[in-house]
Length: 101
Image (cartoon, rainbow, N blue to C red; front, side, top):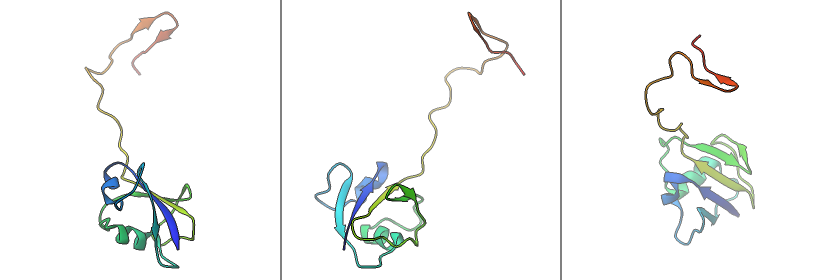
């Protein structure tokens, strides 16, 4: 059966040749689980990731069905730490004040 896989960020290197826009349609065995699809793609089992089947978060033991989409994201993290020292005291602007707790 065929499913679509979408691999994002650092995981896109596991897409098969010919993939476009971080997506590929692949052939998997009937009754394949998400973990089996990840193994087929060469994604190491110890690599943390966020898994979605048709846009819904799903565990690795979810069985995929014909035509479904498996999306895999690496763990997401916040941005860079704030530039400069933390605000202390208060900042005055018309209609806006930050005061210490």
